[in-house]
Amino acid sequence: MPSVPESSVPESSVPAKLERDAPVVVRRSSRRRQTVAAFWEGGTAVVAIPGHFSAAQEREWVARMLLRLQSKGDRSGKGSPTGRGRSDDALMTRAQELSLQYFAGRSRPVTVRWVSNQNSRWGSATPSERTIRLSHHLQGMPGWVVDYVLLHELAHLLVAGHGPAFWALLEGYPQLERAKAFLEGAAFATSRGLDRIGMDPNGPELD
Image 1: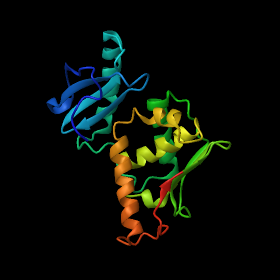
Image 2: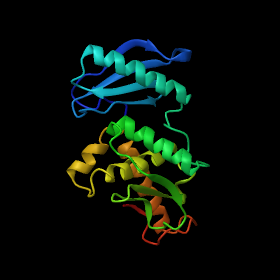
Image 3: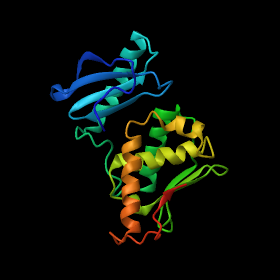
């Protein structure tokens, strides 16, 4: 993902560093309204905040997000750990973390689990039952891809369709376009028989 500000609101550097002197950059975005995100970008810790935040709010959220980022112990820029080996319990925990970070905890699934009978969908949700299912084919993919699928289905517990209101919920995820492109590439490869994971011939989609 290009290392550029998310909007015309200028980004600001803050005199804060993580362990091992990793630099920290605060990036303000006029498109953000409530969500705050932190991620690695080329060895730099980036904290993305809404453009309307006051200086006091910036200090509070930067400190909070840097602690969370540092606790993950991952400076590779790839986001959260790979989905390989995650249990259903770990998947539920991750879903709750993502809901809290991006949706203020408003999306509350009852169950989140891996399934092996979902060959035409990366993920699916049943809003009436508040259940989420992820295809086992995602296991082993980068963590930021699994996080995107989780967020996609968490958003469906709040908004059923794929209209503007739905995508507005996801715009705060910094790896959104990258993850979508990754899954599109995986689906294309599957549709051309370039792998043997047994997916639907038309390629998997997100429900």
